[in-house]
Image 1: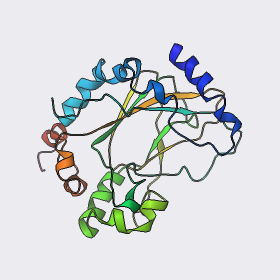
Image 2: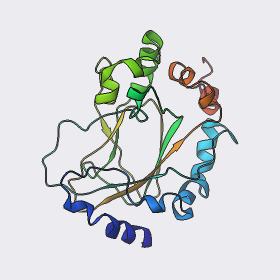
Image 3: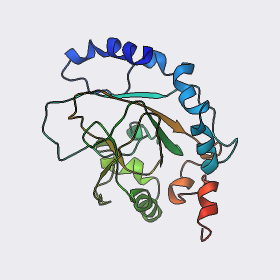
Image 4: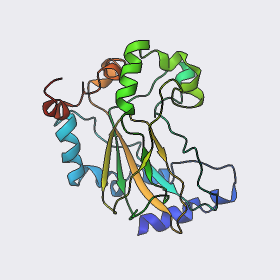
Amino acid sequence: MRFEHHCVQDVSFLLRSPDHRGANYCKELSNSSVITNLLIKTPAWELAESVIGAGRIHPVHSGVQIALRFPTMEDQPANFAPHLDGVLKVKEGIVQNFTALVGILLNDLPDTYMGNFTVYPGTHRQYEQYFREHGPEVMLTEEAFATKHHSPNVPLPERVQITGQAGDMIIVHYQLIHAAGPNLSDQIRYACFFRLDHVDRSKDWKAPLTDLWMHWPGIREMLPEL
């Protein structure tokens, strides 16, 4: 509760700015043990290692996203702003991909339109094929990656808003298109997101974009055809 109360106090001044749409709050807490322990001191870490590999994930000491979604009076929007992470610097020639996105829910989300983490199933495979056909460098040359944070050449399936309970863990592949759903409820959505990186990913950032499970040995074992 101290975490929640601090965040509410911390963001109160931001709510006075209609232009503020930041998704990362309370940054002074993001490196604290109360936040990082949500992953590394719970079964979530073992689950992550079971698919990415024991001892193969870079230590998580910083960069945790404390993600709050505040109630809105807007109608249900048609566009949830689907996106890939790590493309904010593509105009500078930098792709900041990683291995897995892990979310920990900090309050119950029994229904949709409560600020739910939203996914577009199968898009990780669609982008694997797209990068095979056009090369991972297309992220640097195709304008849409810089402006829309995804390619309009890859069609989006019907989105799925993830419901769950406080303490639930969400783990998705880096290449899965996702979004933050609108919050039409009467409560703030609290969650923390961790970007996990396999220790070998930075040696060749392009390779895992065309080989989905390169750094997911736990998944490869379940898919022997790979």
